[in-house]
Structure formats: structure tokens, C-alpha cells
Length: 472
Image 1 (cartoon, helix red, strand yellow):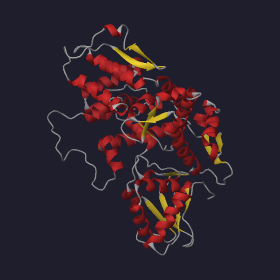
Image 2 (cartoon, rainbow, N blue to C red; image 1 turned 135 degrees about the horizontal axis):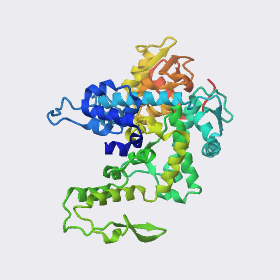
Image 3 (cartoon, one colour; image 1 turned 90 degrees about the vertical axis):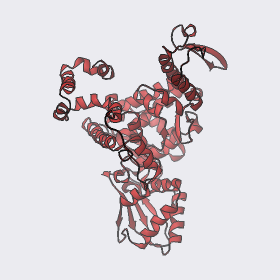
Image 4 (cartoon, helix red, strand yellow; image 1 turned 45 degrees about the horizontal axis):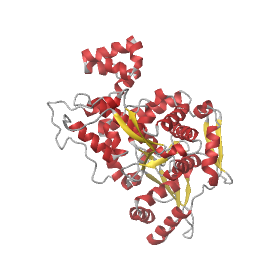
């Protein structure tokens, strides 16, 4: 009960909720069945989701057949998602996600009647977005409907321009080129806050802007073209960090801490609760706790040492930036609503998946005006998609839908102007025409090309040469 109260402070002031927890402790699954629709209790139990979902009874061995394995046909993106979420977890998360959006709607988030209108110049996208979003009131950010127009371009915002706006904005804002973020130590697609961002003019407000953009994308259900490290999401949720979180930031440092954790350090290392860091070109000592440089690390206190080292390494040079970003995020959305997610769940909600699963895409595609799945032109279309590398597939998806990310639930969960809307291919035009897109409706107008070679060339040309949102 003490641990529960520590993770959920409301439990201390709610006798009714404590009684329900006690009932579960006494009656087990019978009480769980009886109380399964109690929202407050579900929120409390969700705080222990990792422990619950990873628990295996001692008497039950987990055979290879019982281990969750990705389908051989699944794309690397689905394999990555499945590795993070086995079947019971996926069902639980999907239910949690539906409940989250119901609560947002119930509390009036993004429902209007006011509109937050952003008229954006493509060649000044970052500047215009910053001025408009930072000039909006907290109430408008939370409650207003979002309405995006691109300066000088015709087209009503039924969802297409907004999706494209978040796609383009996130591609610039979170790009390491601008100095606010940097690539993680492990790859070149996940990013984290850069310590060098402290040298960017007005960096506190820029990170507050980043937080507001993340909040707006979450409220209006638009995916971002940005993938952050797990510690980033933990920082956003103000969740505790762990030793494994250091790996994405500094793999060598992680290995050294791991060695300390796994080995008896008695009479082996002369460590103290003190570190050295560079500030303004000078190397200085910093205590991890009061009087730290005079406290030796021993086998008995190394757990505390590792915890303090992890916090220091993850917060070094970026604590102020993180606080500004979190502040902006919670100016848009109530932290109690987002608190139902853990870091891996929030990652899936904000960014979707990176890899394209062609089988899932084809399964969830609709056809119009004479096209069908067995039509020769459609057969050639999917052959072209198979020939595309993943980057070109993402660019085609962005061309048609306004975003290059795939929702956690897959292509069946693509959204259009009025909610879920599947990818659609419609027969249109002459063989001399290029394919055209209707991003509000996730629709590709595909001419009846006479050969697979022509279809491939025209499709590639449309994807690589077209970058503006036109009238639909």
C-alpha cells in the first residue's frame, strides 16, 4: 500500500479507493472482475502495468511456443512494435488509447466552437508557427479547433493541411541541424535534447514551443515525423529513469555503470559520490549528494550511487530545456490525462511506427471508379510499392495522406477529415497525367497507365516532385 501511495498520491486521501485495493488484496481475481469498470482503480493499477505484464508465475515455464513472436511476413516496423508490446499488452494499450481520446473529447479538448487559425508561409514555416502558437492563449490551445492554411494556396482544411503542417514542422523543429536536438548515440533517426541548445537564442521559449507542438499533435491526433529516445518520453511524463535509459545517450558510459552494478567493487575502485564536468570550458567537480567527494562508493551504497549517476548523466546540460518543454506540453494538455501512459505507449501515440508494412497497407486499401484489388493497374501499383525502398514508401504515404507515419494500430487506423478513413485509390484521368492526391481524404487518383513501367515512373515523379498542397 505504501508503494501504491507513493506512485499515486490521491490514494492517501481516498478511503473508498483504498478499500477497493484492499478488496483486491483479499479476494483476488473475484474482486478484480467485480471492479473492472472502476476508472479510478484502473488508473492506479496501470501504474504497475510493467510489473503486471512482465510477471510469469514460478510454476509456469515460458515455452518457445508461448513466447510472442512477430509474423515472418511482418515488416521491421511491426517487429519493433511487437517486441515492445505482446498481445495482452497491445489489447490493454488500445483500450487505454480509446479511453484517453474519449476523455479528451468529453473535456472539450480541440472541440471548439472557437478556431485556432494558423496561416503559414511555407518558406517561413518555423517562424510563422512559433509566432502563432506562442501567441495563443492556454484556453485556445486546449479547446479551439485547429485550422491550418498555407499562404497563397487554395484548399480547405478538412485535415490534410493540418497533417502536412505537423509533418513539415516536426521535420524542421526536431532536426539536429537547428541545434535544439541531436541524434542519439545508437542511430541516426532517434533524437534527444542537445546540451548545445543552451547556446541557441531564446532557447527556453523554443523548447516551450516544442512542448506546445507535441501537445497540439496529441490533442488533434496528428502524428509527428520525429522519433525521440525513451528517456525523452520519460522526461515528458516526469517518470523515474533507469540505468538502461543511459544506453541511448552514451553506450560506453552505460557499459561502465553496468559493470559496477554486476560486479563486487570491494577494494577494486576508488569511486566517490562526485563527478567532473565541463562548464564554460573549465573542468569542475560536482557532488552527487552533499559532501559527495568525501563519501566512498561501496558495495552497500552502490545502488544509490548508480541511481544518482544515471540522473546526473541524463539531466546534464539539458535539465532547464526539458523543464521548458514539459511546461509547454502541459499548457496544452492536463498531465493527469497523459499520466495513464508509460514512455513506450506515449512514443507510439505521438510518432506511430517508422517502417511500412506493405501487406497491412494493401489489406486496408479501398478502390473506386472501376479499380479493384485484381485490376492490372492495381497489381502494377503494388509491384511498384514493392520495388520502392522504405523511404520512398514513406514519401508516397506523406504525398497522399499528409504524414509519413503509420498509427500504432496500423493502416486500418489512418485518419481523414472526419475520423478514420482508409487509404483509397481511385481511377482518374488520362495516361499522360501524373497521379494526384487528396490529403483530406487519404485518396490517390491514379490514371489507367498502359504498362507497369509507365506507372512506376509517373508514381515516382509525382512523389519526388510534388511538395505543395493543392485544391481538392
